[in-house]
Image (cartoon, rainbow, N blue to C red):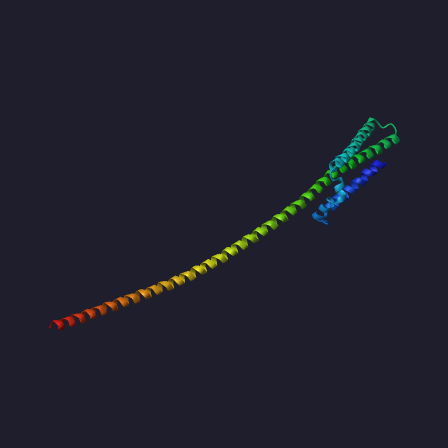
Length: 211
């Protein structure tokens, strides 16, 4: 295997290791998020798309080269079997071209898979942050509503107590008025009785004076 294909194969193994590491729940979304937002990645953050598609373009060039090699040696093997050594050599080159094709194809595919996983991890953690903030805001509002309801209940109880006290005072005033009315009526009756006695006494005195 030549140097470039050894490098691409090593990159493919690295991609597989990275995908397994991202899928296994060893690190939380927060740790991955902090890792992707670290200073090291911030250096390449602005040109991430350029680097990604540039590397994908390089892999596509190697992919087209492997396809060209596959077509070349597949046609040569179909043309005829003149010598066994040349036939074996062509078969080996065809096998290598096919191997390089699969290595490059999987490298390109896993590159897009890793990119999607990174985006999903970042989106998941940002969604968790928004959910946490929303839950905290909801809990604060619930606490405020509970405090408001409790204060309203307390005010209502105080108002009911004041109304009850005022009602009792009114009842006392009414009972006092009733007593005063009955007392005034008794005084009126007593005054009427004394007025009648006075008139009787006056008539009696007047009758004796005439005699």
